[in-house]
Length: 249
Image 1 (tube, rainbow, N blue to C red):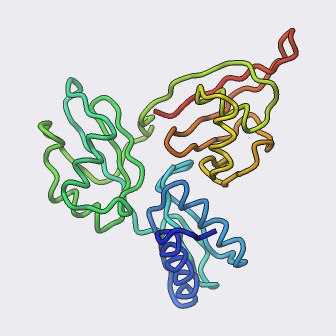
Image 2: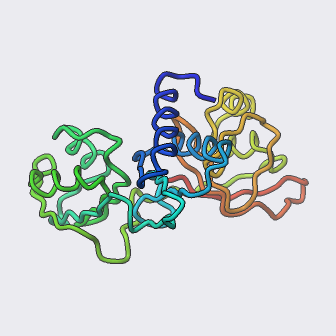
């Protein structure tokens, strides 16, 4: 499961967190979707139950793993992360890449940053406490655009990068069929992507093209993006299955 050097490093960090949590809460991350999937599998295989994943809000894409002592209930409020709101003129167009590039260019590591959710005139980002303190004290511009930062955020959260709808017809709800429809690739190429371990369903890696997909599933395809499966059906007159969903931009 942990064949790459970076995966082995992650495994070591996770095992250390679970071991050290006998004495105090320990945290790893932020983790991307693939890393979080590997972490969930390791935590399950170790039978570790006093931990949880949290990224600052429900359904966050990037998360931290928290391991807690037996005497302490896992609690998102204990995670060492903070939300920050950046405000700018609505006429200034800033996207996810602009914010991430500015943060990394300022010297922050990607694993100190969680989700970045931009919208017109506002962006909410999540960061480890030390990274959040740095942003609040150092960031005044994103590129050429002036920004004002403050801790916390007001509901509702920005919808982030938005969605692009897709639809089509497929032979069956097999994973290879759904991946092909979502990405516009051939079914053969979709099967190769799955076999290569590039596809996750609901944060879990899958390598079987015949695995089934259901409404509400989330597919993450490395190099392609995330896809939400909104509808499977009805069956067309020719016996094929209609499909509709959204790609996260």
